[in-house]
Image 1 (cartoon, rainbow, N blue to C red):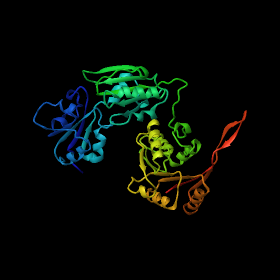
Image 2: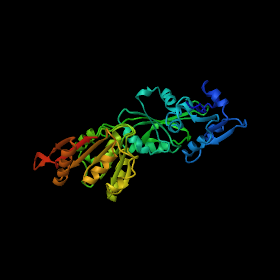
Image 3: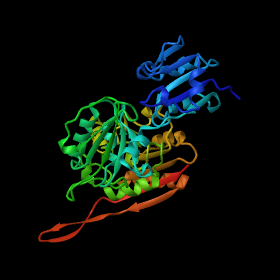
Length: 399
């Protein structure tokens, strides 16, 4: 078992005086202190070595590896395990090497200031991340706590809320919580004008007018939620497809022939931290998928311009694969080899040629073959009748 040499302690805005009792001996006994400029400025000049966060931040991992065996104390804001350095170092070092003592998290402090039950709050970070991530959390009555990037973040968030039909929502900025400079400011998103300190947390209490639209995270968004050129997986088929793909936290989807991105985007919306890579050789569709991903709260969608199977090589192994068109033996073999046991593959076809490929693969590998036929009511003169969309043959299989 490795000896504990690396400690990570949470520091609040009340400084070193507010260190948890268990954290104090770790701080006092450290030979080397690591942290941001704000944290290290709290430490008196006592002769100990101080290391400020490098840029890029991940460079600190190699630096710390070189210090293994010496007593190192990392100073982090609040709770290091809430979108903090603790998760990064936890992937690089074994738990036996580390001792983590959290301080009060910004989320618990903000929830206590607002008297919100934190178990009913969506907690996220916008520090170094696109504000479009908020879109998947928006619904009437939602309560959201978000770590800000800097003093400009609230205005950007307010603009996003107003454009999404949530301009009536209350936006609260909580600055330097727990310290002598603590300040709270609240206003509606549609009238927001405040710009305060860089170090703050944003609280959002969502309100929308009855006529405003918002999108559920349940798969099956309306077709007109996407910018497309007519070639997209229709709403009803999309919902059925995603039910077979089974989105899960941190799971990775390959969307081969991503088109406007509807399947990949709904995969990412459906489960927290779900990931997706979309592959397409059409630059216009890559551009549409990118725009749709931002508009619908999936800015992390990775898009690769290329052809399957050649440009699949080198991509991270998927947990699920969707093929919306262009299925061939070569494409199937490439994605099937990449899938781990338990991985899911779903392929849809609307042409007779595509259907023939699915039938052959079904005969060889089994799985489940489904025919999906949808009809929608449409005007017929002064009346209405049923207008069918193209039927889809769907093959799904678990490896």
